[in-house]
Length: 196
Image 1: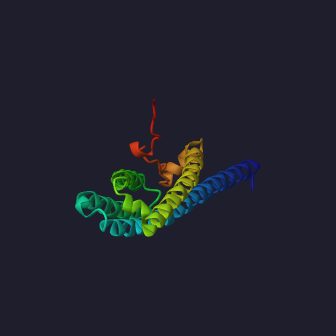
Image 2: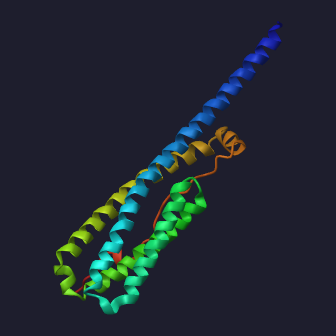
């Protein structure tokens, strides 16, 4: 075997190994994105389970606020469906964008619900509602932490995917860019300004 042929074979083997390393790294980073999303999914499912209980308990006090209560349940159902779609394919940017839209709408509906509940002192006094609201707040915090971990995994994956020559392998093997999970800010979450 000639020296030139040996060198060529070594270069081809090194190139193939390099492509395999890039491919395996992409798979590993994408699996981290999927795992991080599964943590969000757990918390969102918990949130979606709490909301109907909260609304059902509040119905006794807010019977004439049926429109708001219905809006919360409808927003919850849409968010739940979007969560299931995103959980099936967390690498799908479109599914994540639909989830962000649905969760933002749900957060807005909950904001209206909480604003209306301020007009009902009986709601604040109800132990069950207090516990549900506390649990919902705790779940919201867990969603926030999970979302941060997911966004970090997405950033690491996208950064690696976009580097040279990784983007060549990524595009050739259909590794698409992942989308961060960010919720639009809702006015009720902003601090209230007090002036004298």
